[in-house]
Amino acid sequence: MEEKTYKTMSRTGALNITFGVLSIVFGVTAGVMLIIGGAKLLAGKSKMLF
Image 1 (cartoon, rainbow, N blue to C red):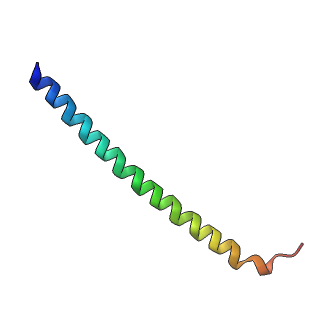
Image 2 (cartoon, one colour; image 1 turned 180 degrees about the horizontal axis):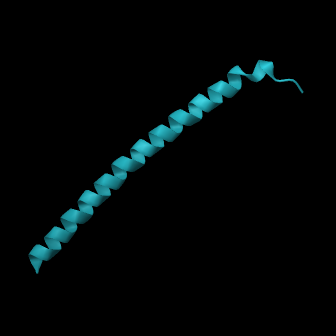
Image 3 (tube, rainbow, N blue to C red; image 1 turned 90 degrees about the vertical axis):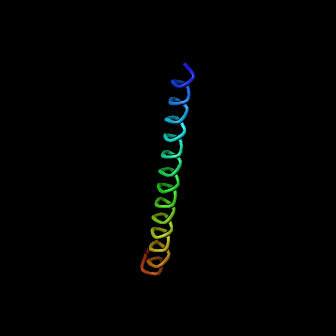
């Protein structure tokens, strides 16, 4: 019984670490894309006519 609990806990821990790493990667990627998009908007600001 204890061995089954230990295996379940280790799988859950590994899954949590995997999701954590994926969340960090996704967050950094999204942040970089937003910064690039904002920089392009600021660079093209002088070309806009209203």
